[in-house]
Length: 383
Image (cartoon, rainbow, N blue to C red; front, side, top):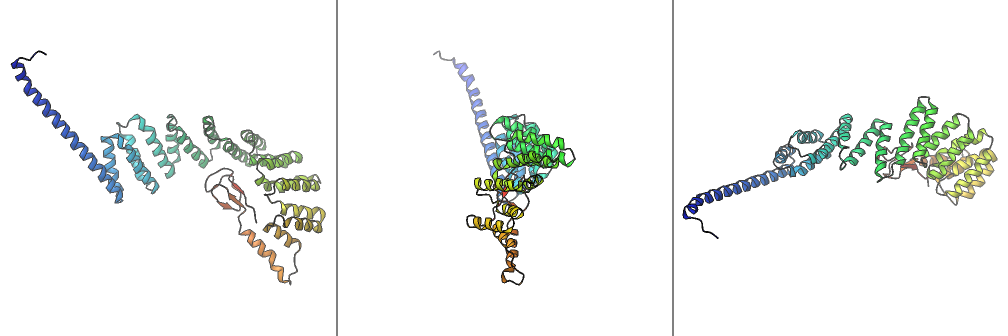
């Protein structure tokens, strides 16, 4: 290696000194900046621990401008505000993040999604809908946006929009949305029927069955329309489908079947049919309905004989009530209060219960008011 001339070596000495001095100063400045960043970060956490959220919000918003890697902390802070019901603070945080020109593109959809959740919780459904539709362009967050959009359309009863969203879910194939789509068609069908358009109601209920062949609600709607038109055989076919779609819900159509068979003077056939259903599905109780029918067609003795035969095999409060009704004691008898006691016990037991969350009511809701699950409520067996 060729040695540098002495004059060149002397000239390079101050340059090397200056470079070293500059690098040392830059390193110290970076270290001071990192130290200040760490101090601010822990100060923000300290504010959170001391329940001083306003101060924590200011700190983390400043930090995120310095280093966008801290955005996870800021979004977590927004989630804390939302859980505590401080929606205004959560909205302020997310709007502040979105307003920054330096917001990295990869974070935009995530912040939009969080702000949409804020608006949804605040009841600003139109604003939330707009944001979730914007997030749909991002495949990473599109599924979450679709879920929120479906919740909005359900809440606003915009059933056609809900169907469109559910169909987008269906294309993904991760979840079976056919039963939900069928329920949306049923909602539209009932709206059409309420406005006197039975033809449109029938068409929409048929679409519901096309979406989900096991939709009990659609079968009942179509049976009701046929019954209104006096087409009893057609109505019976729809009502009888319920046995195979969801036997738990079969008790819902017994009264309708009685009307259909009664108008054809054929209640004996209905008794035979219901006995077959009871044998095929022993867990559902048709005892009260069958007892009433037998009493109507074959008189009291036959009804009591049927009850005595079945009560030992399938004891229930409903059955006991029928026994007491048929064998009504005289008013001066000590047991005369028993029918009222059993009736009060039955009234204390709700008729329907959600199999998902346990919500109970005396009215059947196709959409559970508690957990928002479709077709989750079933008749409760009185034992």
